[in-house]
Length: 393
Ligand SMILES: Cc1ncc(COP(=O)(O)O)c(C=O)c1O
Image (cartoon, rainbow, N blue to C red; front, side):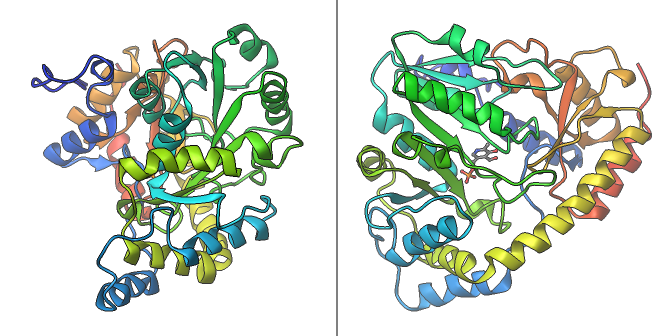
């Protein structure tokens, strides 16, 4: 599974290690062989009809020029209300919330806006692939820790061994893509303790906050002393089935928000107003009902894919949150995860993502691949039908 294009000669040295994202590569290959794509995590459904209508109405109402840099008032207020309504703390729409180009834009602005050259950022592998690339763009260094599979538990010892005088930030992701874990109170408490003791910024990526199956989501920003040092990041793409709209946000205290906005204004300046209006409508009118519908329908798909993967001989880890299942595929073959995903694509035409690409050196994760279950049951059914035809190697 070659991630490198042949025309890479002019890419700067900070970015060459990262190649083309695995998601672009997988989706391109999946399309070219007519595979069922359980690789890239985008829902197949459309967003609720009134969100599409809100976008159209806004375009027709003439909102076709630059939106305000930090986001339109109504969306920032809707985000503030949504956070407060779900016990995630009170953020002021005026100077603590910034609307960004998806969660990725919020991550970029947070990292580029706060880090100095050579600062160190602690990440937990397997980690979403944008994190180390964005840290590199800032001229900072990723310190990638590898909690052991299949539990992926974060311990105090693991973090403390990695701290140096240059450590500036810890990046957490809960619910965690690709492990499917929800960090528990013990782990969040340890990270919070260390952030307070060492005066670190915590970036908390919570894009899957609404996709939880076994325990409620808890934001680390709500732990004592953490509100003043945490940047909470989320977006609407996953929840409202509109990943292509790229509307996200960052909630942070005023000094961190000023840093985020300092970068955001020069990265993209502002986000299309019609999509922001649709996002405000989603949070104001759909959040609760949509959450219930979403959870029920994802629960069903999660169980369906878990059972099916077991039936074909894999050993899936039950995800606590997100819409991904990480599974041990080794009962079906001795090759590594990259070769296994190649074989899946070439022989039975199903796309999955090798877990090792979310890590620095693949250690401990080469027995796992990730399947996305944010697809209609019929698509999951077809994928399982094809997987049943896979020969053991
Ligand atoms: C953990 C995590 N963070 C951020 C993102 C990006 O979110 P967005 O599409 O809103 O930029 C993703 C998308 O897959 C993700 O899995």
